[in-house]
Length: 246
Image (cartoon, helix red, strand yellow):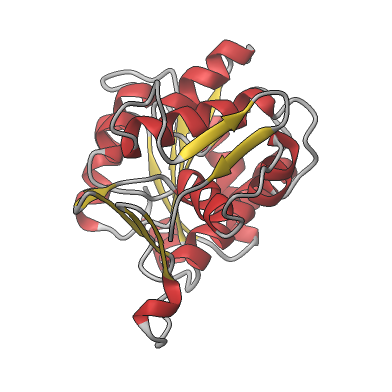
């Protein structure tokens, strides 16, 4: 990174986005579009370099390519999810439904196929950043106002934390948004379309698989037995609900 670009990128006053892709043309393209929106940008060309950035920088969003040398996007995403809930948008030339499901199942919050429309990717980045800061903002209000409790499940919407049986559970921003949405509609069945429209804030189209993957990941993290869920219930042919005594 040359000194002029380094100074321009690092002096941005808004949120920080880490772009990770071994195709320098794509990194440059995203840099142009995102810098025009005022974001502070960091660049990496493989997963290992991305992890080094995260050791020293506070990052609000990661745009992460799947196929890269040294450490690919899948491995990097899994490593990041061990410690951080920062939103991750995965990029990949592999664009089948199964590829998307695999990407979402290992912790990504969104999946964009290559080639992509830069303006669409910018819009998705803005959506992720809005949701991330909405769920992580530090608001001086009473703790009880932001606690949603169901049996041994406690959702703290102010701290963006989830406890199950006094055990901390790490959810991605999307997973947390789905769980909070269900919690705020206790006992009410929400269709996959309703969940997708509220959480992703975009038309449903083929979002059913995306919702199912995220619900499955939530269950794997909060349910004692994901195959016999105690909290997130499936109402076949309708959708999902969170039920239990508060």
